[in-house]
Image 1 (cartoon, one colour):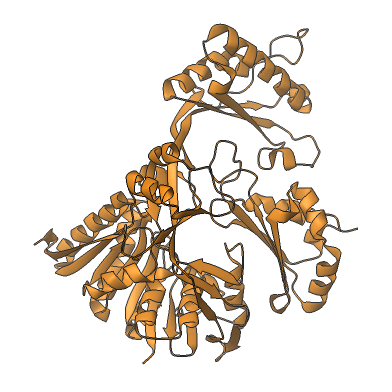
Image 2 (image 1 turned 180 degrees about the horizontal axis):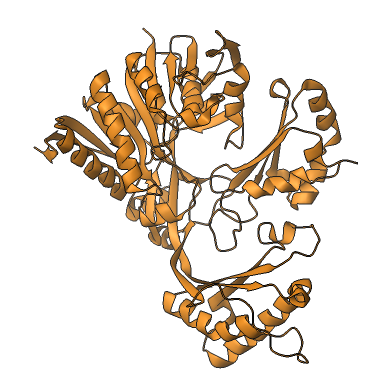
Length: 99
Length: 457
């Protein structure tokens, strides 16, 4: 078991419009991409986010060695219960995932 | 003939490298395009029709761009004026432009494109079945539409092309898609359609597609088979990786981008290094839609807020902050129920324990005891008077509430007096819908003025 952040060079989270957040996991090279792509399951990510798998999009982009997850924000950007306007701290949920 | 578009930065207000801008002007662009906004900073700006960036900063940068336009002798276009692209912020940019024109002695034709939609028009479109929800969409009916303080439609290339056809020197556009101002001219010049949209997406954040994002300035050259991207700062480079990776940024789907009238598909795009700092892209596909649809953005007032802050340093209270907060919350609801006429649904008390779970809330699974805990309270009520009054009901207890009934009253640290801060209206995004239009200019209006010495003639 290792934290995802210890296995990859960069993880970035950002709002994608007011209703979605997108997280890019930069794996660095082809070998690490193949490894993470196989070890990091969508079910694991959805469980950590407490998200409906139907509302989570996953892209494994081989030529960039990037795995991307897009999901509906826990609260609409700027609404009464929103905690993070740019959704950038949600990347921590991925960085600290044990895989 | 290739079409050369100079993009000074990702947004007006963020700054750019002046030397790089001068290099771009010397390279003889056909047009200068910059974005003026987005929803990135939240609903307040659209709700109020105001700019996120300082007038002084926008004015200073716009002055440099107006000088660059005069040197280059080409049109200057800004989309989504003043962050939110409402009528107010388009007119705000117009006022700034007239001031600078007077200073510089420039005589200009200025076109303003307004993207504002009226509630009656949107209700009529809703009733006619012309609105479609995207995922996820807030519920929408006539009452919800009427409650919006601003509704804007995101203009595409058609509306920008109409503005360009007026022969204007400067185009101040209301809300547009990120790409529309850049894609408009190449598409008018019959450059490759997929390349026009894809190059516009790569360039819309300025030098974010390079290794030196802060330098701002890039030139995108469009032709009949694709586009090339070149940073204008001497110390910036583009690589196939830096360019293709930009499709990830802020996009929920890195391959498909929906625009008015169709979508861009970059699944088969090929990114090739021309040399060590320029990249060529081919193979992008534009797929026309069966109908012309524009995206709507809207904001309404979701209540009025007052905030309070207390800091806990006492180790006993820090260690039991959750338990303390549970006790305080129950106590406050009882107190409010007995001393005011408010019902439980008339207000919310949102407590955020900073140092514990303020960023992630229920998703936080980290454990550990911090040195101190910040207690941020966000009170939301139906009007400001109620929110402020609640803060005064709460004040003594946020300061002194004990963990148990059997201990001395504590006193926590209030960082300032008064301990409450009125935030005014809470604005919320109210739509995630597309509107079908029979003509792209439906709902958009153009105003063209001749400005001589800063005054409309």
